[in-house]
Amino acid sequence: MHSDKVEKTRIRLWDFPVRLFHWALVVAIGTAWWTNQEAIINIHELAGYTVLTLVLFRIIWGFVGSSNARFKSFVKSPFAALAYLRKLPKGSEEELAYAGHNPAGGLMVVVLLLLVAVQAFTGLFTSENTFLFFDGPLVKYVPSGFANTMNYIHHANINLIYIAVGLHVVASIGYLFLKNENLIGAMITGTRKVPASIAARFNAISFKPAWQGLLILVICAGIVAAVITVARAG
Image (cartoon, rainbow, N blue to C red; front, side):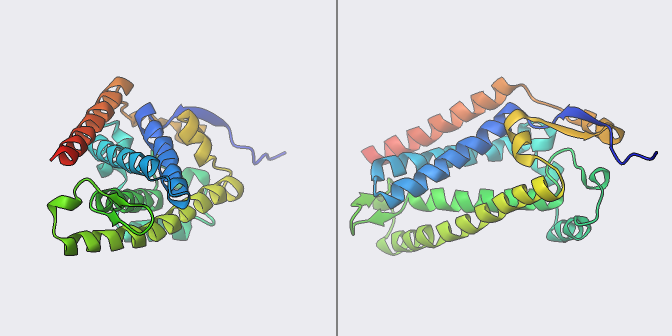
């Protein structure tokens, strides 16, 4: 009797620095949202600096990190993303599997990274004197018109982040129930089950030692902290 069951094998997919970045960003964005709702400005500020640190780290890791974490491995054109989405409904797991982000997922990574980078950057120049009474560390170094523009972008851009995060969550849930692909679990454990017939393509992933990523993250945190300290003292 013919069986549709496909033999699968577990492969290593995501390195620790990538997974740490992903979940730390989730916590930082969630904290920034909650503290904004509750007007806890000191924690909101720290959450923003954390996001800035994480973005800086991910940009660097996108050039020197593990092979499937590098931008050149997954940043494709919007046309490539659309082509992938067209074959998604009927495509087989073997056909749709990538040793990292697929073209649509890679595009979403870039969009999210850009949006949170804009949010963190504009926050440095934001002035809130209505009920929060907060000035970003770089406000005093720029003209009031520029600060007002940054403030406007900061408040408008968060809505784009909500939309992008919502799409990301919906896509992950869709993959789980429609394609039996646990993308969330893979980002937690760093491993993924794939058909044995295509496991060999994942052997080409070159992983960097976790300590290198952690060292870069610490350096990024130091740079952000130094800039903020100097700006506040100036």
